[in-house]
Image (spheres, rainbow, N blue to C red):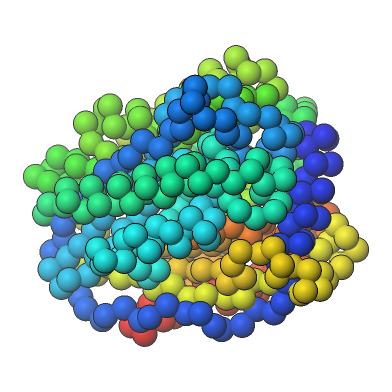
Length: 458
């Protein structure tokens, strides 16, 4: 999330406040009902989007992602933000929905409101994925938690309903648009377009990019893969899902207008070129910055952001030239819940907040982890910002012969997650990891159990 020296000081205060949002122990409880076991042979799909841009002339609201904005209201709209949805089904009656929304995160309250409205339409915590692009220029004011209101503005029911209603609308429109398709996929390398924020070559205090030190990509790697899923009909593309990893932070805290950031530009560009819907899923973005990142010059940043989004769209277009059919037509999701309340705060000398403090203000102590299968592609969600190294640990749960990808942040938000060695480094990400040096075990338990149950049909 935030940067600059001022931002880092603000972030520490934010993290201390976040400590008051959680407490307790994590355990196996609150798991969702098991999905039906079935295997289909043919696929159908539909995609749609709903505009969730607030009316900046009528409403007063804040932007999310940077504490440096200090709760100042947004001043306008640079580009619209959307809830985008893809709904897929097969002849065995399996259905899944994948949602991407141009917000910093989808909190548990927003997730639960959407699930409640979609339950009668056949969607639940197993087969509905709610992911955020993590734009740092999307609106705030949709989170009741104390710390969210303190740093990003008071909860606004109209804003909340705009987000929830838009997500529901996109899912239902996508379901109505379903038609027989063939799903094809491709994975390519996108070289040099992201970088690891832990690398000393990147000045996290200023956001100015390389400082003259040559980046060490071997020691500080990032996920440079891009995976596309294309919905095709008679070799015509009817929709595309793009998975890539980088923070949407080309725009700095100085930007005060609503924007979907570079993922919005990427989707808009693909939609114009393909005359078909596009949807973006972010990956293990905890230490993945775009290149270039923000430059603290608003006009330059806007130009850079648009250029970056178009460049990523260009790579997606290249991937679409290398498509091969998805192997299998199985569509299945499984989610499990884990108690996320036992914290240990590195920035507070390893302090473990007492449970009586945390449960007074925390809205949902149970984090949701999800595994979702589309043929031989397996998506694994994390309710926060995992680093690249942690995502590599999660690959131990990837069944042989499958393409597995981490999707984050999705289905909730519990800050950053790092490996023990990263925790010991004392970087921003390790201070923002609220679950101690062994936090990776919590994430592995949630993701691993979701994948295990998915594969076993439990």
